[in-house]
Figure (cartoon, rainbow, N blue to C red):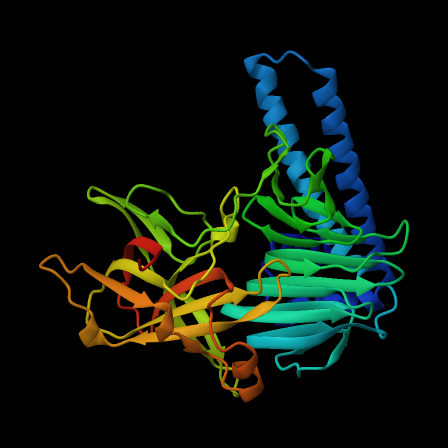
Amino acid sequence: MNDDLLIQRLLDGTLTSAEHAEVNQRLRDDAALREHLRDVAEQAVAMGDMARQRETDTPVRSPHSAGKSARYSSWLALAASLTVLAASAWLFLGSRESPVLTLVDASGSIAWSHGGEWRTEVSIGESMSAGTLETVGESATAQLQFRDGSLINLTGESELSFSEDGQKLLVLRKGSLSAQVKPQPKGKPMLVRTPSAEAEVVGTVFDLSTRSDDTLLKVNEGLVKLKRLSDGSAIDVPAKSSALASLDSSLKLNSSTTPAPLSAWSFDFTSTVPPRDWRGVWHDTAEGGRMVSSPYIASRRPAENMITHFGVSVRTGMLNPPLTLTATDTSIVRYRLKQDQPSPLQLMLLTSVPKKGYYGGNFECVIAADELKPDADGWCDIEIPVSRFRPVDQRQQIRERHPSPVGNILTCMLLSSFQKDTKLTVARFELKSTP
């Protein structure tokens, strides 16, 4: 594979895990390739500057010039993506042997790439040098700690590159993280980059998700500076506020107050299109919208074979503005659903600790096939009280630390069929409380 194609595939995200590890090793060993990548990044930045300058110089646009503007915006998007690519590449060019992060806790499968090595098993308590960590599967989580005590929590299918060479640098290529960051040295804030934005963190508690073409930030404590990469504009996002940074620079960049936590909420798929980052495929039909399950990695067997489930997820943190759902001792989770064939279902609640964003435990309820009572059209309604949920993790110390979802934030509700595609279809989700 020639170098131009190699960089293009790295940019497009089409490299396999093994190829990605090989590229990381080549960047370490091949000075010419590093220089070539620097040239590409510098050209991207120059194109972005030129596009922004032309936008400034053209205050009145004719239909013809509007077409040019769209092309400039595409260059800005390319520049933003290349900037993230270059930033992630720099992680592998400096010192890579000193421990940067320690894996404090994890659920599901994770993988770590470092120095050309791709490992699918990382032990709790193990310290990791600069590299890339990937949580594999919709229900996977990983809690990571820097040497200064700052905590990072990854949830769902996420990919994070990290380094600390005098300054913490994180590159979140996909997925979601929450962080509790200790006060950072003056002039050296933690930087969190995504394909569309950069967050500058001095010391605070926040949640951040990178979506298909934007980045969603929710600040719980402190202050975070959010910069949009498409045009370089930036705002300060204060506590209890959220902001969206899009690759579309025509959208206004501002912050808004985050709604107070809710213990009752519903989402109707028949009338509302969900975020693209939720698990499942939304279909518009004559009878209304439907969310049909899609495959995801549930776990990894010792021989590295994947166990696949088919599910539909609800992640309120990916709504704009992001919402916070709290489980109480009277909470009930309700679904309207159908399947092509009778089959048991698994309902999982992924949770975090309020305010601090710590991992709060994953919990499950198995719904037997005979509990489902479909009507003549195949639809049925199920109601699951919070008391039925049990910890997924079988380790005794984890079960004692996180015995119940009550009092926790529900970061994801995941309804799935077990290793069988039953065409699980959801029309409505609801969280409510008994009187």
